[in-house]
Amino acid sequence: MIQVSTEETLLTPPRALNNASSRQGPRVDWSRIVLNVLLPLVGVVVALVLGGVMLVILKANPLAAYAALVHGVVGSRFGLTQTLVKATPLLLVGLGICIAFRANVINIGGEGQIIAGALMATWWPLTFAAWPGWLLIPTTMIAGFLAGAAWGFVPGILKARLRVNEILSTIMLNAIALQLMNLLLQGPLMDPAGVASRTFLAQSAQLPHQVWLARLVPRTLLHSGAIVAAVMAAAVYVFLWRTTIGFDIRAVGLNPEAARASGINVPVYQALSLTLAGGFAGLAGVVEVIGVQHRLMDGLTSGYGFTGIVAALMGGLHPLGLVPASVLFGGLLVGADTMQRAVQVPSSLVDVILGLVILFVSGAALWSRRWAARRRIAEAIVGSPVGGDEEGPR
Image 1 (cartoon, helix red, strand yellow):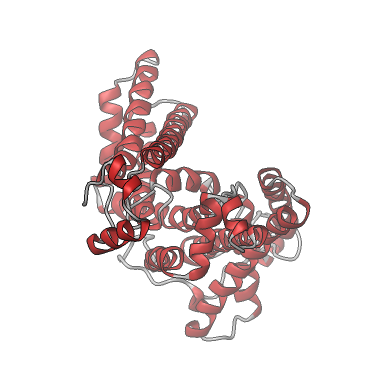
Image 2 (cartoon, helix red, strand yellow; image 1 turned 30 degrees about the vertical axis):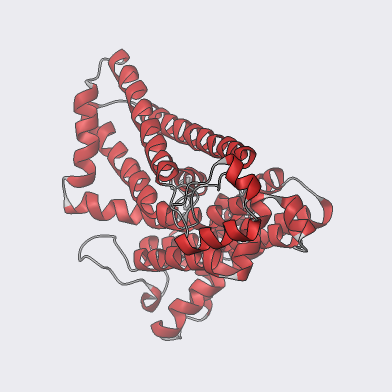
């Protein structure tokens, strides 16, 4: 990198500086990348330490507890595959969160959007059960994506047209989606076999076999939806950093006023971001229905809509950084169950430890973003180029 002092910056014509910078190419700000990676990990460690203190208070061995957690993830084929199964919906939800946050909007409606996608992924295969799998699977995914996108479009258009706070509208839509699912599972989508046997379980009929996603590892729940999620991560990266629409979304998120002054319709791109976020959450609901459960059941979301937000923050709000972050949180969800059984602690304690992880990771991500903002301001004052390109997690 060409080092330019403050005096040289003031005396050198801007065109000369731009030419010099362009000859060198984009500069990777490794210190920022390392900070974005290390801070969330430090947050996880601090949360586990505090969890260990609580385990001691409950007279449980924290070393044995955390050893059971790790063994539950990497100690068997089931643990490894189940980690990827849990990571798949987290990755899909997190991709939508990355898009929304890049446009400076917050999507808290992942739970409802997952339900919307799952409802469509149930109705569509049951309605078109005669279709072959090669047609039924992709159309089910598209239909579920569109259903989630429609659920995300509502708060998006409310924000764009009426300036309704998207946090409130997305949270309220979560409750509406949950009640809608309960209503349908007690009516049109209720399993006819349950009605005949008078069990009246809150579940739908089993989906036709041709819509089931293929198993990647025999006798496990790991399905081909994991591959779909990984492909979507690469696609979102290309969308955000290699397309004009993605550039406009990031411009809106970085500085809405500057984006508006340059002719970008800020409300439209914010509404588009919330719509896309809803679509990816809806796709998460699809893969859970046709990949894992093969029917719609109560408790489908498993908190993925909220945990996906933290996974996205831990991944630096970058699609590629989100991949390992989703695997980490998937492992925590799997290992926590093993830890609970191994040391006989209440399930509420496991929830507290996971909550501490979420709290500290979110705090670390917030501190990192504020530090980066202060650094950009300082560099702008002294006249040196702002470090970093758009290739690394941010």
